Length: 396
Image (tube, rainbow, N blue to C red; front, side, top):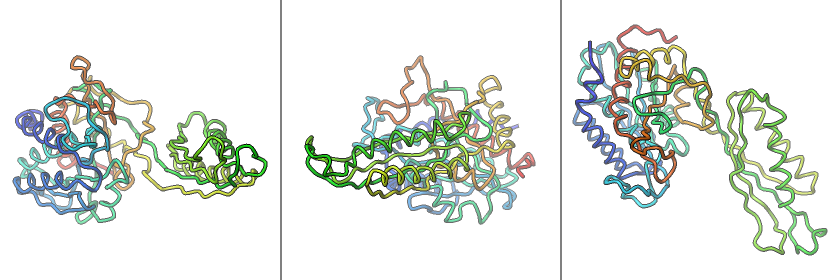
């Protein structure tokens, strides 16, 4: 019986070192040149085959006994445009950039799992693909990687991913069946009126007044047109219009994002947004332009893969440390693209520690992790991949 956690602890110093190196030199989406170079240097040192994908992404393969049975592990590699305010020795050296969402940890964990699995490749009844995904925080490198064929040649049967979670104590994980993360549709609305003097509003078509009506009415889609049992959100994130107190401007620009959990709701909200905006704007004598983007789909966990992941995690951290999540997150995650194509499981790796004051939220300038989670993540990832390949798991 292979002790995956023992193996992970044996290379823990390496994993921590990788994570700190990536943290010191964060790079934004599709700019991860140094990060990609470090990953490829590691793969070369391990004799693991790879090729570049999605620009700065990497797809590698650890070849086991059966080339026809493939499981994939995914780690995202990009950072966020945030100025770090931590004073730790490995704080960001790249001004205005920070690994404030834990992707440095995800990359290091994937490298750790790769090293473990490569050391036992002769015992693998199949092969393992490694997806180092760029630009998760922006447009999602996963979509490009899939378009470039990473799930095929040879065909991947299942995909496993994780995300560090500061709200979960280190040594625990959170996992959920079914929908895990929302789908998203960013949008932009331009409302065009007729500008003029603030003292003579009757000679104008005021786009600010029109925009105010639009913003308030859009919220009724959620509160009055969707079932209250099904979560959905319309967020207006920015409003821009006008240059002075006494001038009615020519136009107002609104931008926001739709988040939904069901495909039918996603389609419905997009349609109703257009109908409402056009209806209000035209009734108030204005004109409008609407752009709705097709962004990340819902992230869906396969029941069989959830059961498999739980079994693997129980071996590493014990059944009592596995938290079954009831509610999905309204956040989005590009791993969803993989989950739409293959049976997949995505879980949350505890990285918080109140005693060490590691409690600050992701996407914040003080975010950090308890690095004890790194070996746990590498162990669970490698154990789960091994189980998919060696236990005749039925993923149909």
